[in-house]
Amino acid sequence: MIVQKYGGTSVGTAARIRRVSRRIAATVRRGEQVVVVVSAMGHTTDRMIALAQSVNPEPPARELDMLVANGETITAPLVAMCLEGMGVAAISLSGLQAGVRTSAQHSRARIQDINPGRILEALREGKVPVVAGFQGVTERLEITTLGRGGSDTTAVALAAALKADSCEIYTDVDGIFTADPKVVRNARKLTYIRYDEMLELAAVGARVMHPRAVEIGELYGVPIHVRSSFHDGVGTMIVAQVPMEERQRVRGIAQETNVAKITVLGVADRPGVAAAIFEPLGKAGISVDVIVQNIGRSGHTDLTFSVAESDLKAAVKLVKAAIKDVGARSVSSAGGIAKLSIVGTGMLGTPGIAGRMFRALADAGINIEMISTSEIRITCLVARDQVEKGVRILHKTFELEKS
Ligand code: ASP
Ligand code: MG
Image (cartoon, rainbow, N blue to C red; front, side, top):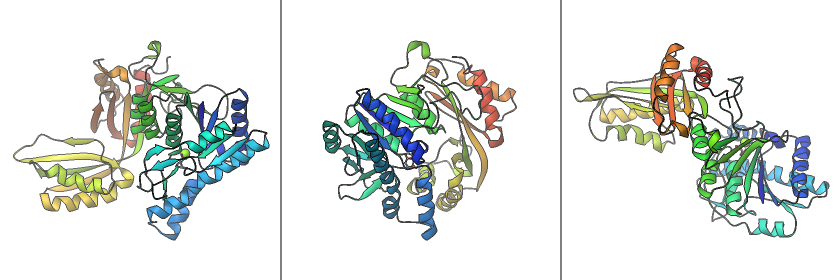
């Protein structure tokens, strides 16, 4: 059994829906059991959000979910009727009908469990279930959505619940690349990537897959095949273990340009100060990323951290309010920076990777403003206008163009 998920671009027009349906039909005719998950057509979701904001700049989250869930509700029956027209029995199912039960946090609900009774019934009747992705319902039958890009999560969660053999994510790119092909001309498509590497890459700017889908894939051992819906070529398999020959110290490079930093100078160096500054940000749903705290001197210290530039204004306001209580000399902020990251499980136990990265950036005259690491990732904050150059240099330094 295969779960096939088709993203917004792949179902963006009637012609594309017909093409996708032909692919589904071909899979069915090969004798496979197929469950389909679809996204909203093209930019439908963006348009609905803009429409909502034009009648209320801060639409209530429940109502916004009631609205945007409709994008997927439109695609599913269109694909099902297209399949029927091709002589393939099919039935569209909403999130509710597909048994997707979620938590109650609107616009970022989490799937709690899936009761795939209707899907299994359809399969028994020889029909292709076409499920609206992105949406679910709470216990009280409130409509929820899973966060932008959430259809991926629906697909992988369904594959886990149905114990499908694999989950295919059809998209408008050929797979996962060693770097953004728009930035690095000789970026290479990876045949395999590990779940943990994909998660790290997604967290620092690679936008091909919804990170929570990768998390679920890892947790339930669902192999995920990211591939193009525009041709038959294979894409990238996201798996637990990459075959030995595929190992490389650094697997990929990612950049993220929506970054700004906030510096708090002269805060008291005592317990509770960092908590007082960061708790309000957390409550406001603002993620803080790279955090650097200097060694305290004469009872004071400096704190610098990064946030998304789109959150900068709100974040500065909260930090200024917080330091009224804890005391600090000044708060300053700056946008225009970017994150540049290298990721790879092979970095574990390979000394010298950080040194090579910093040397390559230094030789290119790129200044590093902040650094953060995980076991399998090194991230540098650099000036935004230098990040693409940095990506190209690191791609070369770590010989990623070679297979
Ligand atoms: N339609 C939703 C979005 O645009 C979900 C998805 O495409 O996966 O974010
Ligand atoms: Mg999408």
